Image 1 (cartoon, helix red, strand yellow):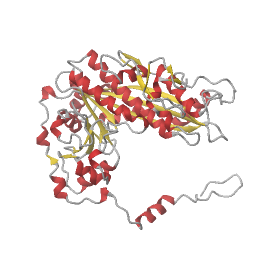
Image 2 (spheres, one colour):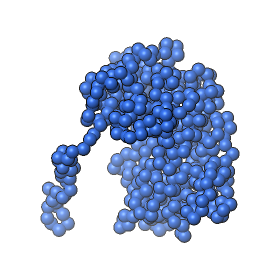
Image 3 (cartoon, helix red, strand yellow):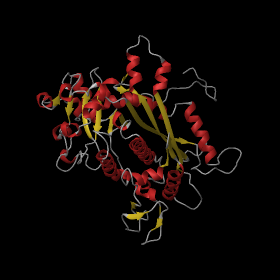
Length: 467
């Protein structure tokens, strides 16, 4: 290498420089089963494919005119030279509102007007930061208590602020446990004390003490994120769970805003899109049932088929499988694949495919190949019932009346920025993503200031202070 080291010698290649190539070579010599590479019984798959004509696009006067996409990202950084165990985490969620009418008008122009495109997209952002490992909110507490206290304070102080929506995350958490016009008075919490067996303790917004052991319970303990936190490691998984909860609460807040302020006009013409499936994984998974009940309650008091909600997956086993189907021309442009029990069994190689997703998903997965050839995996909630249950759930497209309008928006908003991308999600991702290089340097500086580790030796600001 041309670089000279401090000792005067030249830099040599890392011993791990060819590790990925070596691992691939080893893997090629091993025998294992990959469903996405084994497309079998294509005739059976074709029987589950519906042409675009079965989902006629709504008339022009009834087409959705706006899309509101939500995306999140998180990162963990080392913030103390010489102390690699001191880690600080950042998580943020962004919402991007896209005027589809402006996009349609620009398609007809010879040259796209960047000013018009910029004006068609409005974005908002909520950010969180906290010590995730090797650093604590205060002396004398363990890492689990540190996380619990920090999440409680963050949810009380951080707000979703868009137009007339100005609500703390804690308010949105109680709203999710209620109905659109009436938040819940309490949330169910399992006592975090491992020596205590109290379950589903009703906790009000102010918190309460456990009757059995006296430990103070926070309403945010209902998320159970602290159960994934450990003394060692990055705790990046727990931070990811926190980010997914923020995304869900942002969706709840923004959809409820339109439901309250413009139920007859804006709500029936807006598609809400979550980047990723409509699912809640890990310890907060019980929010899945709350999300489904909440939006079904909203639908029962909204005009027409509103609200229109879907998730868009960009990666995963089903996405890989869908791309293979498109590559083999089994799935052609305009086709929708119904992912029933048999398709699920093929993709996830599960013994109990009938009960797949019943604990995590609040929307049903479909595979759609857009008219321009893009492959998209949307998840769509049904207006009644569960998308997945012990009996296979609702796999029939007729159980999802919002599906035609959702497919129409997917066809109209193709993006070349990402493989199989759509414009609203790309806009939200651009707002939520942490920049590489300079961006992470800035985050490291912010974390150093928060923890009081800067050279000035000053006292640290509270980790939950506004960023």
